[in-house]
Image 1 (cartoon, helix red, strand yellow):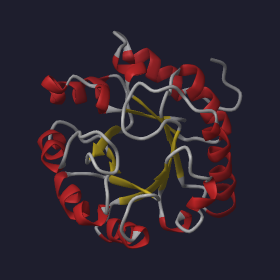
Image 2 (cartoon, rainbow, N blue to C red):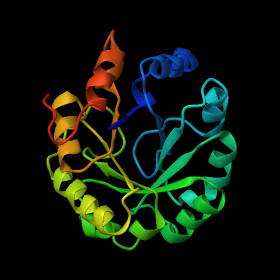
Image 3 (cartoon, one colour):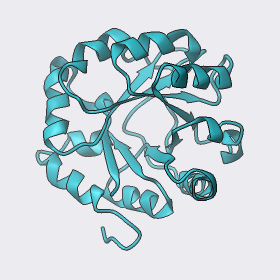
Image 4 (tube, rainbow, N blue to C red):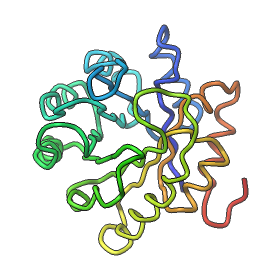
Length: 221
């Protein structure tokens, strides 16, 4: 069954705790949290204190995507705040391999991601070090962008690796995800769909999440 991870970047931040409860009631598997530092991407969002403030609202796994420079500096802080998964970028400054090892040493699941312009082969040196690969189908930094088709081939590339070496590897996709693009991503090999505006704008998020969870090779849209 496909996992669904609503992206809190599209939530109402004036009632963030209630928004977390809302996605849990709707059947979400994970909460996806985007962390931006204004340096790696030209936007600033949240830090460890915000994540810590909502950690006691739910036991749902927190999937934290670090769009920051030199992520090793903040791994401890996000672990203490309650992150369950930390995903970092291949393009970020600092020692990426060391950061991934640090994440796993702290008992968290480690993830690797890359922006649309980067080739899938940039992941090769890290795939045996991670529990999660996040394929970005928009440029990291802002919500509401359109889905980029190039991500489908990258999903298939990682799926081929997973089937040969690590069947438990989660393949997540984020950016322009809706029921149509989400189905295409699952068909390509994705196991997790992260989405913001296409879910949070709905009055009935639960039925949409249930539909996405049903996606598989033979499912309709």
